[in-house]
Image 1: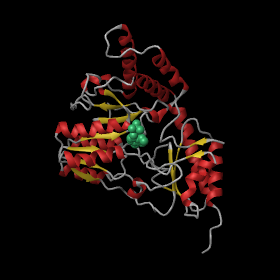
Image 2: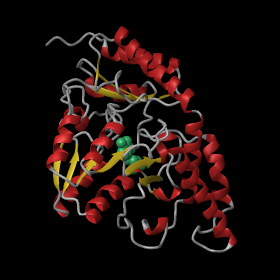
Image 3: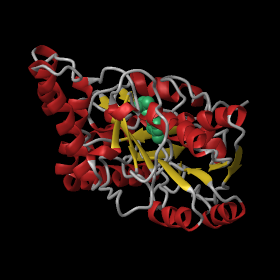
Image 4: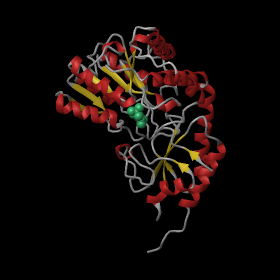
Length: 380
Ligand SMILES: Cc1ncc(COP(=O)(O)O)c(C=O)c1O
């Protein structure tokens, strides 16, 4: 049996998405900036994708800027808001994706920004009271906090944080890469200036994403060159990527209710089966509380073959991950688990689900894992 439980890393491309992309790979190849019919045709495709996305987020199409993915969207929001708006203080946590944390660290070196860390509570959630105090003490800050953590699934109360940012005039960026097209977001209702998205996290193509920039905010261009993306990002657009992401966004919203119910049931079934079959299994983060329904991060009792767990699962046909910085077969440690003070001597595995997964796959995986973990240990 082949089981893919690494959907937070990337997802399978939907057939309907591929079908939407095909004409642009085969026949409709005009440069969207060309003014002739070939160009006008592909320009129309891009603008339709932009409108589809904007409508589903309840924003205006002019607030959606296509990028090469979530990493670029995060870089664009952070670097260019700090530089253009001359922000001198930024607030974040130690469990952000590296596309955020490394960008902020760079800004500390190059843009003279002071970086404050909001502490996390015991369950890994952001301490909102401390955030408020930090913003009270440091007016004109950039706040960059992810909506859902890609390793442990903890979620941020976007509305509450947005309201605090508004109260203290802070610019709010959220890395919404794991939640866009998994949750219905009404960005107009939230007080948020920047939100990042990546197409391959919801059955769209890789190498494409977008940044939502609230129209009240004006920042400098990110990539200098042509006038694409209303001068914000020079370079010929990833035409088929954008078409595919627009279609994937539409499909995800169309079937969001059923998919959410299905995946939520898989996650809770897995948690219950694990508790029944593996004594001492624990869960990292607030997995059954305010948590992303696609992610379950578990912590296992150490065994003789702890280091080989992901490798052995791989041999059994199961793809999972030890965290975003891990390659299959070895768990090299995770800054997120360290950041929430997990017991680093216990092996951790992140399972992440999609609409294509089944209860049978969950049971197969739990049984294989129980065989690997529940073995008599060497007595020294
Ligand atoms: C939370 C988060 N932010 C950013 C990214 C980066 O997105 P991309 O792969 O599109 O650059 C990822 C992908 O792993 C992610 O999970």
